[in-house]
Amino acid sequence: MGTAQMEQRLGNVERRVDRIEQILPTLATGDDLKAAVAPLATKAELRAAIAPLATKAELRAAIAPLATKAELRAAIGESEQRMRAHVADAVSASEQRMRTHFDVVAESLRYDIRLVAEAVATLVERDR
Image (cartoon, rainbow, N blue to C red; front, side, top):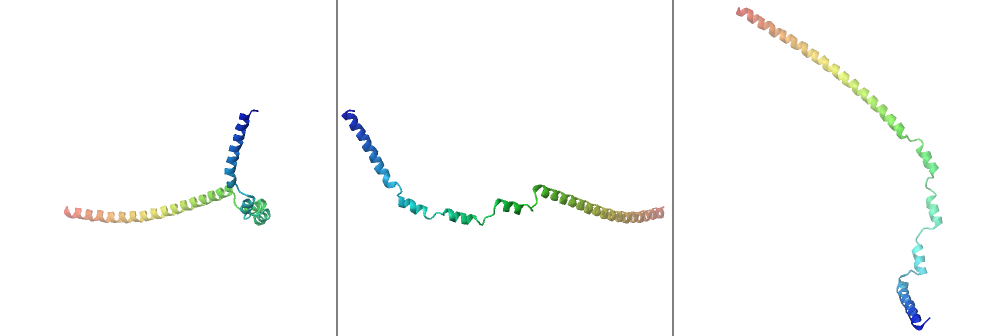
């Protein structure tokens, strides 16, 4: 290896060292890392925090007595049927009351028309 090559490689090494020297002050030290990790929870603290939480089995046992979607849909369907039947009964009763009312009104009108017709007949006979 010639002198020129060695000088070139030495120059490359110096440039690399200069770059490393610029980066080194920005890197965290061991003390910096220890200070950053210190406030984090330990494994024991995490286990203690998780311990009171419910397990999958406990959650399944708690959910088991709740209604399923199918059961809710069936209950809603039954409620809708009962409601429709109740509304139909109410409408039928209302229709019956309305018919009775109109029958009474119609009978009253017949009576009034009969009176008017008799009055007109009487007037026509008097004018003859």
